[in-house]
Image (cartoon, rainbow, N blue to C red):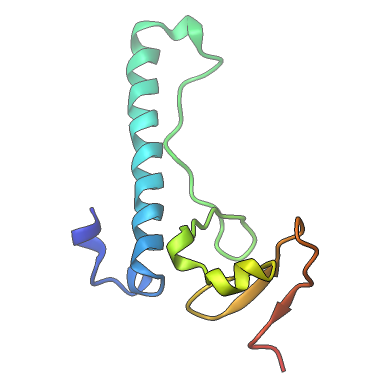
Length: 107
């Protein structure tokens, strides 16, 4: 799947390791759906309803999972209690270390 997506703008917008993790999550979701659908056909009494295909949230209002591996996070920032995400360098507070939220892109 990654080889098919490598040239897309969405895949290239994130670090490669992050894009790969997103694709792995998508693969897990579809495998789970197919397994549940197969089980539903043989034992529908185990389910409250027919399994639905993995859904996609509305881009502006929906919340989505974004996976950043430890390799995509600044280790220096992490030691300071800041999770520094690439490529746009937004910083989020690591509440367990008491750091404050900030963004390097803010004016």
